[in-house]
Image (cartoon, rainbow, N blue to C red):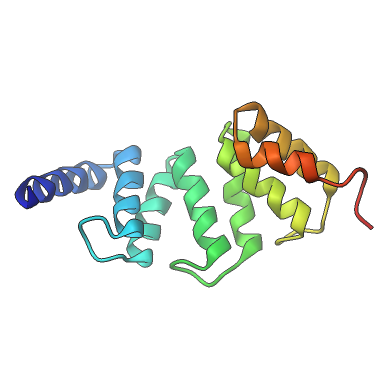
Length: 144
């Protein structure tokens, strides 16, 4: 079993190094989760960035997530936003959720309940349960 896992990881690495954006993202997840390798946020972020550079929604979203949580980089809400924005604009419901969350909680931007509502709605329409729940509790009108 360990030999098979090693072979699968080697194949994934080969595809990632050859420029396959999905393989780059998947390899980033391997390092982020420590799945068969030691957990390494720096290495995960390196692969996520390569994937994101090719426009991969998951890569974009997870680069943003790394900035939002300080994994592999210093925590920086504002730096997460362009990644979330690009992925959300391309239809990623998870990125739309985190973009809405940033607007609701003033994470890297000024609080803007209407923008939060917009992005939660975008995410909720794609079935994101967290966005659906957030919409139910969002205050009516702008925050003061």
